[in-house]
Length: 134
Image (tube, rainbow, N blue to C red; front, side, top):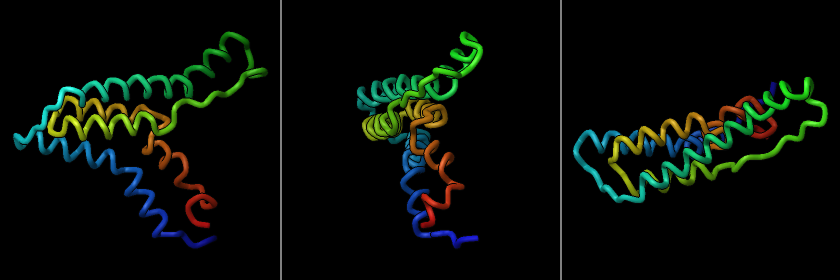
């Protein structure tokens, strides 16, 4: 069994979970009364949610629909979504609307659903020692 690269894994956790930590800080700031309230923040969150739904559809729904319609996956072609675009839009949205509790909660939902986001990247690759430890 190979030794785990703690430095690389720690850096990956910090970078991958940074948007979530930023959202938590925004919610805390909202409860404390500190709000920047730039109108564009929520717009970026809505755009991020559209990207997240599309990525989720491409990851889980599209293949199932093809299987139901054709009876097998023969001939099915996988397509990529928009990796990290949803995460970038969430970060922009939370920075513009820092303290907006509703926007931050929408951002949390986006981070959970967006299969092309940084949290899903960590989840998908965490056990891959060739990526993190070599």
